[in-house]
Length: 458
Ligand code: PMP
Image 1 (cartoon, protein in one colour):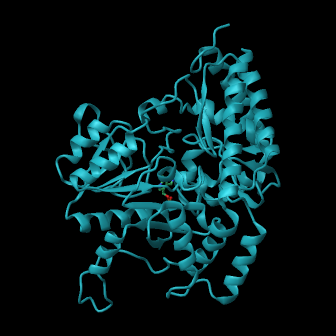
Image 2 (cartoon, rainbow, N blue to C red):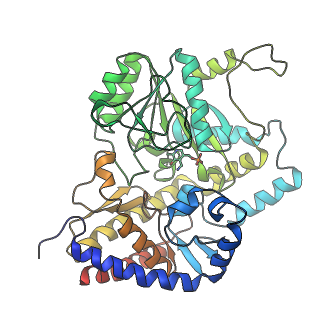
Image 3 (tube, rainbow, N blue to C red):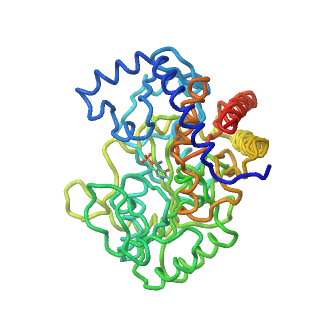
């Protein structure tokens, strides 16, 4: 039998059957989640605390009570080994004893001070070791870190424009929720509620250096904002030379290069900038670096630190400063947790270990596909893996979207959930976290084998 790419009619029919059976089994396992959802419907739109939760899963929303290590537990007492790792926000694992200790210590001394705490220094040093940039600022989310990075870039360059790459995601920002327009059309909004297209905003295909250069040559672009590896539409790796070429073009045309490491910082130690040896002007991040306590961060060159220092905001409003900061940013609890997480828990050795687990997941997905006559491959970037339903890995978001098949992802997730594994959201793959071991990977791959058996049985 020749290996097959994609999903054929026989696979889809099997998936529809599996989905119906597994959905019924899932509903039967989660009566308390269903009850909470129905009570919540009169209190929160769609019965969820964040609206996206209602749209992401296409199964009843799972309400959770607690977690320990790699396992989260729902309100009905079902355990799941978590391979979604909170889309990187809980990549440390749950209830880590050292983190619990630090939270307790900080809570006993005040979690929010509205003044700097000493731990900020160590966090800056750890981030500098990873990303090479000397100056850092802190927010409470990665999205806000991106907002601030772009503001600094505008003031530093005196330009308005931002260049983005199709398929990148950088948070719920006015400037970044735009997709490439078809056939030269202007970028299209990816969400409602946005204002008009920001001036000078352009979106080009990832890996299309010539298109990026054409935009930069107009000298209207303050910053290029890019994920060094696209991680929000499956995984798209940069072609050799793409990121260094982009770096060089930014320098040539006076544009700043901002690399969003929010996800990639957990894939490999030092993220994409280290792996591809590029020297960005700004790096942004956040998610799990404080073990799940909210935090965002961005690093910058000395020159950009100088721009902030030259644009001070004062309390009396006598100077018009850069629009940065928030009341709870630079939060004492976030920084105390980030210090311990970055110094003691997410060490280089631990990053290497989970990159190895991610490689095992990718190998296992490829082996399982091959054994079932499927000409697929796996996404692969350190601890990040995922399903590519074609033999060639994608080079653009458009190509990557062909593998984001909701029937396949949703059926897989509910099948795995009923067997004690929480699989990834559709745009990501299973990701190894710091609490996982080889046994968890074996468990995941064992379930995958059974799932593909059924999908391919016809
Ligand atoms: N950057 C990237 C690459 C992301 O994937 C995300 C969230 N998925 C963000 C930024 C925004 O992070 P947050 O939701 O913490 O603001």
